[in-house]
Amino acid sequence: MDFGVGIPHYGGTLSVADLRKTVERAEAIGYHSAWVSDHVITPKSFLSRVGPTFYDSFVVLSHIAAFTSRLRLGTSVIVIPYRNPLVTAKMVSTLDAMSDGRVIFGVGAGNMPEEFQALGVPEKGHGLRTDEYLHAMTTLWMQEPASFSGRFVQFSDVHFQPKPAQQPHPPIWVGGHSNAALRRAVRFGAAWHAGGMALERMAQTVVEIRRLAAEAGRTDGPAITTRLGVRFVDTNDTGVRNPGQGSPEQIREDVSRYRELGVSTVVCGFGPCLGPDFLAAMERFAAEIAPHFA
Image (tube, rainbow, N blue to C red; front, side):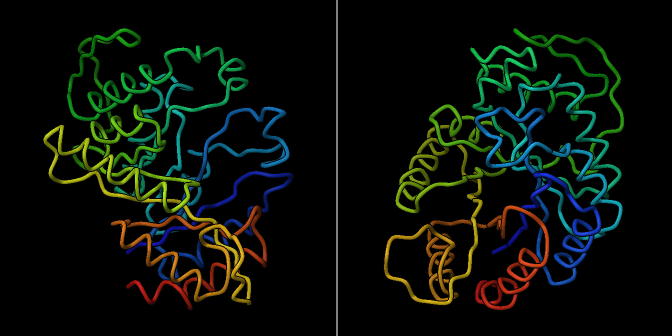
């Protein structure tokens, strides 16, 4: 079982020194990957959660790639309809080439009307647009020259370099839990990337995605992955709590249940901002939780 670190690259002020210290330490103590999220603007409805500043996903990962050598570089998740797919494909393939093939491309369709509106992207049909953009991007990564003709994207005999270091392309992890998202994971995904789901609902969704995969003739997956907000509380509180929050024993039990569901990678969030508390929780998880699932 692999464990990644979700990096909060947003808020009031992000300390680049804290970013570097956290990521270097994550690599040193054995974490599998570092993960970023994606917003271009911050709607008022989201301001209290992330603050006014949100650093660009690809720029942050490019910076991280420059001072690490082993950590995988993940997006959790890039909102695919927000950008021209040729531009996104270029950023992903360049990052993968320059990091010696360390990118994991987590993707989603998005769900913030204000952000769609500000970017001039129609929210209506954003799922169909997501599927077509992913198809166009994989075409660019796999063909040379590349041609594609769809409802939203058309190009013919274009030369697209660099190709990704990973062939045929970086693994695509599809987020979301709607029926359309699960079908997207089966069609495009090396993995389904769950987030913020109760364990019982996730168990039901795993059954459904496996049914859809069998229906589509896929015998190899998609793999099951998830995000987990981790908060240590040094009491065995028997009240209602979220997975990942509690004593080390309770958190180990939560991770055990994820493993029973077939989860292969857990992306851990250790706080709303980088700093000593985040680093201490990350160290503690690596020492007290992760070794039980090696």
